[in-house]
Image 1 (spheres, rainbow, N blue to C red):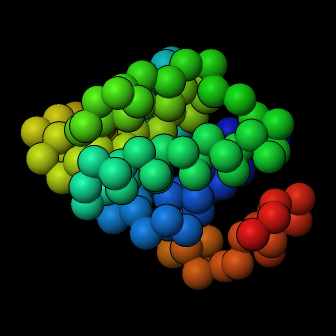
Image 2 (image 1 turned 120 degrees about the horizontal axis):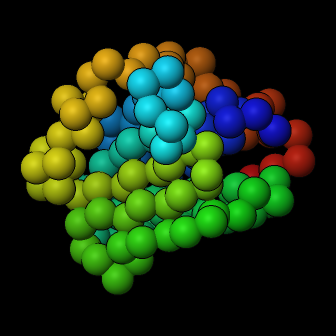
Image 3 (image 1 turned 135 degrees about the horizontal axis):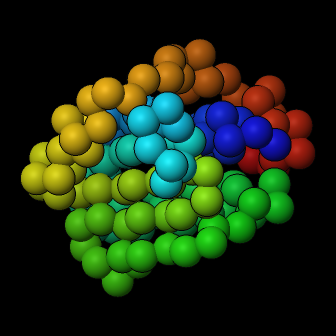
Length: 129
């Protein structure tokens, strides 16, 4: 699976659980830390954790394990490192405060409008609903 496909699956998992303002930023041309950032907002601490759990579950189904996860005990930001893809799940306040889109504005935003609407099995046939 390519890093773009991993980022798209993470974005779809976030959309599946009603993540707010889900974005995928391609940063490979401006940084060596990853190819993509996937960013989303949860509406409550429970929602933030649910979003992160669903990303972990969906990527695990594709045999993609996180190399590191931070913030699971936090109530504002969970970071999931999949080496070439880094997933950030924020509370509304934390997303506004850290403003990753502004910090990484030289990155290219990936259009995910098509995958937001697709059923999961269309994107990834190995996934179970």
